[in-house]
Every structure is written in C-alpha cells, then in structure tokens.
Amino acid sequence: WITNIIVDHVLSSKWNMVVLRGIPRIVSPQLLSILGRMGHGDEIVLADANFPSASICSYKPELVRADGHGIPPLLRAITNLMPLDLYVPNPAMLMDLVPGDKAKNLKTPIWDVYKKIINESEGQQIGIELIERFGFYERSKQAFAVVATGEGSLYGNIILKKGVLPPEE
Image 1: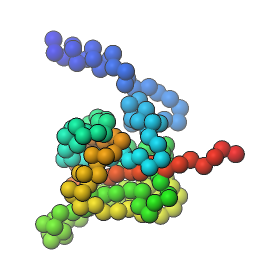
Image 2: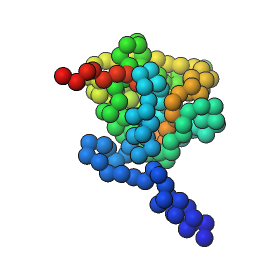
Image 3: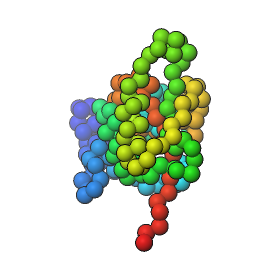
Image 4: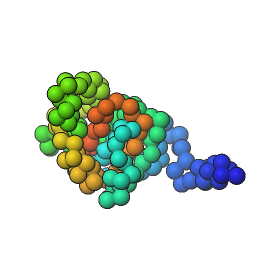
C-alpha cells in the first residue's frame, strides 16, 4: 500500500515531467521554475551525493532532488539555459580539498569536466574560485536552491552565479 501512495503522489505532483522543445529532459519542471525565478546574482548549488543538501536547505535554499543524475549533464543543461554572471571574476565556485586530501595529492578530474562545460557554454574562459569546505557550506546556505544529485565524484560540488541576458535586438 505504501508503494501505491508514493506512486499516487508522484503522479499527482505539480512537478511531473514536461517535455518541451529546447528544454533538456534532465531539467525537471521544478528546476526549470527555479532557473526562471532566479535573478541576477542569485546562486544555485549542484551538490554531489555526499553533500548535506537537506540540512543546508533547512536554512534558506529550495531543495531540488535529482537523484540518479550526475552533475555534468545537469551542468551542461543548466549553463545552456542560464547565463553565468560575467560581471564578477568567478561566477563558478568549487569546494576546495581539505588539508589532508591536499597532502595526499588527491586528484579531482571532475573539475576539468566542469571547466570544459562552463567554458563551452559561455564561449570563453570563466573564472572558478575554490572555497574552503566550511565556507562552501556557509555560502550554500544563502543560495537560491540546492540540486541534490547522485554525483559520486569526490569534491563534485559546484555553485553557479546567475548572470544577465543581453537585450533582444
């Protein structure tokens, strides 16, 4: 009976999947709404599977579940829909390694994937800031939303600052 309740809830949810031209299917209706409601300078966190998304969202951000999805396809979809803030030196931020992982020379190949996606989306080199772990958590508490993903890469969290669209001609 519990399965029926869950299925009924999902089917009656206001966030059912909608298929639209030009909107990647990985972008849920809830996420699309959030991207549309965000203003210039608002931030969104794409959180890996280890990130404390629910507890961070108890402060302010709206929680979006994207379980089972990795961050790279979400990042590509989001940056193709939402411009980054080019008025600031670093419109993207990553969680820096803790000292112990730096001492072990831990590699973070996912960061190169993120940089490639962001640079391709913006058509230029984009500045990316590294933020100490607890500073990253504090900044995340002020974000517009946190997207909780199934990303398994260590240090896979990224914050994006929304930019502006140029006037239509």
